[in-house]
Image (tube, rainbow, N blue to C red; front, side, top):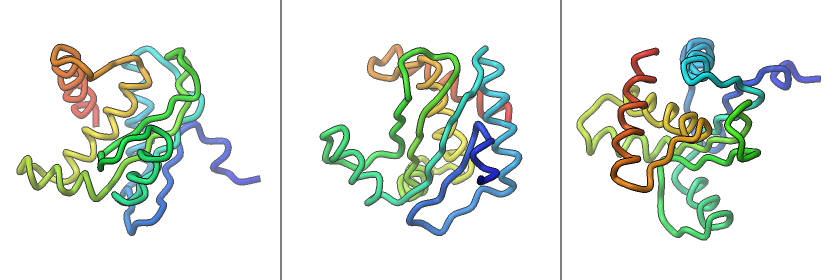
Length: 144
């Protein structure tokens, strides 16, 4: 039996050359974010991939034909305990960071926190929700 099956937060790397270093720091941070939001984590998979990989998921599962930086699939609707898969395009994170003139790692933290916040029940469809989401992302990033 794989040791990673016993871990509630697992990082996967699909079709890209990418590493989280040190991975343990990110795992600890994800748990801190859950704690601050008063939820527990049962199983979260962060899957880091390319634009094309995530575009394929966007087309096949959401019927959207465009690139995106993140797609999250919760295993259930209730926000506690957290369970689900969070797909992140490293290509998009790099491009977003360049467009925003910020460090890649800063943008990566924003996107990682964004996925977890969606699982906690935060939305980003309206401008008001987007403002709340941005504030929560900043709060979560500061925990890192």
